[in-house]
Length: 105
Image 1 (cartoon, helix red, strand yellow):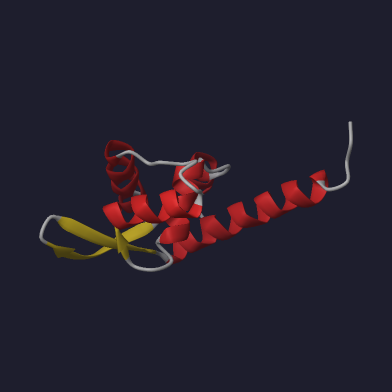
Image 2 (cartoon, rainbow, N blue to C red; image 1 turned 45 degrees about the vertical axis):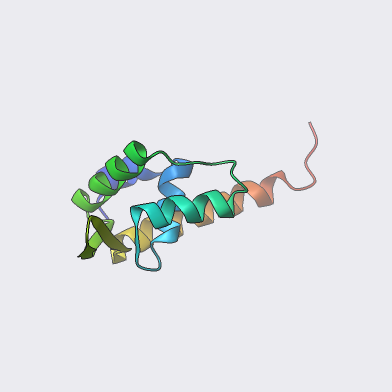
């Protein structure tokens, strides 16, 4: 994997994480926004500007790929590179959780 991309994306923002996580299944931006809102009990609400900016950047960087367009809605899916970055981030989060269990300062 490109080290530059690794430095850009890891650690991931919550927005980036949820976009990649959702795109393990083909979706369009509005669909992702609704799914993230539902998954987080409205704690994370991704604005349209943030969503479409993130999708454009992730597509440019090769983390996701465009699949189809229906009307104004463009659908995307995660690429192998995106899956690799998501996997690294999931391991990082699991390590943080594991290391914090039972620890008291």
